[in-house]
Image 1 (cartoon, one colour):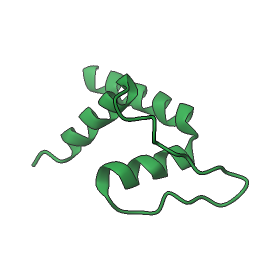
Image 2 (spheres, rainbow, N blue to C red; image 1 turned 60 degrees about the vertical axis):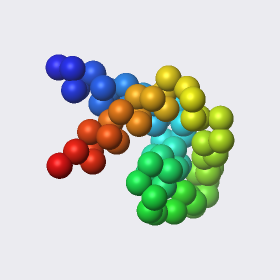
Image 3 (tube, rainbow, N blue to C red; image 1 turned 180 degrees about the vertical axis):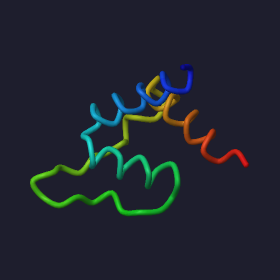
Length: 69
């Protein structure tokens, strides 16, 4: 249930960042691959003000879990 809560928070964060554009920007930022560009009518997401926020910490914690062997 704890893990599901973390994933549901991440899902909400991604939707607030802009859905697909937000997800692509997060993948590029946290994993270093991919391209954050999206096709219209979607809008690209800029994560300049994202670091240092509670949302950033939640996503960072989940990506750290992803990288554990």
